[in-house]
Image (cartoon, rainbow, N blue to C red; front, side, top):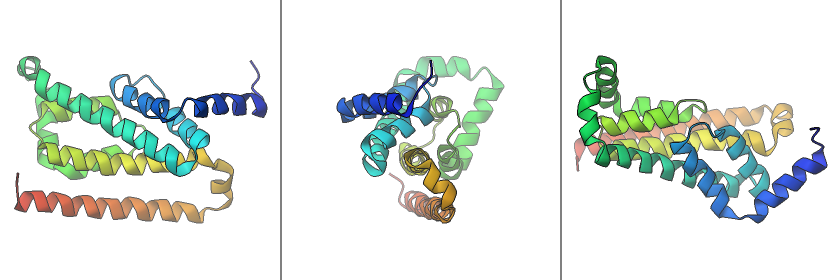
Length: 191
């Protein structure tokens, strides 16, 4: 089927008419079903709702889905976690998450094509503190989703105005420093 600009605009108009519930639900479901194309969801939200509303809706859905997956594994997965630790690679990965904490999780969350569902499961299996997981997820996903939203919202402008890439890079660095400060706070004042 050949898609014209008019056909794509019709799909986006229909999508926009469904409201924020769909815009939040799709990235939430992607946390459980990684087969869903996150880039297409993020770009669709940005195109249908605008850069900032599309970003916020996607971010809420993606963070909520990741946190829900983490808690399901952490709370309901205790019985099968012991069975999984028979496998040395899973035990090593779990300890790796515990040892590197915020930094590695934040970095993985910033990458658009990292295996988000697997990260949620491995973090849930580990004894990584929830606050570390929460802040790394919320901040890291904000970076990744903003970048994808920014790209999806207006790709031609980005190509003609490369200075915007400098802004994106500065944003990533600032969030990393904020995350490290939050992590230090929790190391000094553990909950």
